[in-house]
Length: 204
Ligand SMILES: [Zn+2]
Image (cartoon, rainbow, N blue to C red; front, side, top):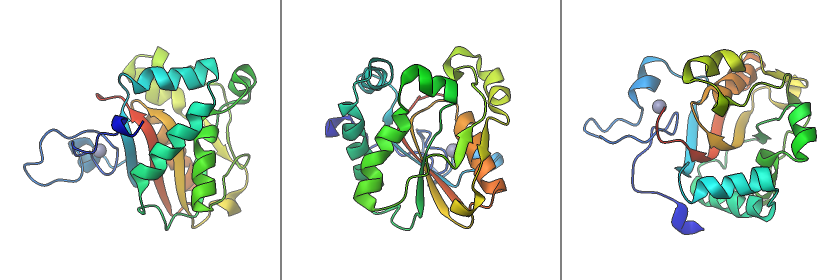
């Protein structure tokens, strides 16, 4: 699985988008420079492309749960020692409806090995997805930001207040989901939000 990791192409440190030119030695993409997102950092393991896209679908839609620990291992390796200072791990929550339908939250399953390896607590019930938003992939890009508005709520502020929260997810597409979640966490007092994502779609 380690062959899936692309460590060659530089990515924006804020949003994880691949940057083809590093003429100015920039660490931020143009979009993050002009309109900084609510999260502070994004680490991405690989592009959402073959073969990782079908492996992610095997985990999500065919419940191939052993893949979650392999993905967790990739995230641990990608993060190295860069997230040692983090306080808590937050797998992106699913709505109650989606959780009942699928039977598990793939982000939580991927985050479990991280929590064990780093000995950091997992936030499971203190932050929730309050409504069952349309799957982002089914919407035109222009509607995805609107779709996510108000999608998350923090139930126990004390768990994230003044904390460095690492948000764990399987796939990042436009980043609107992670933006909405990070904005919600910051509103409730989180000091720093880092995203740790298995795969990112190559174009915004
Ligand atoms: Zn960026």
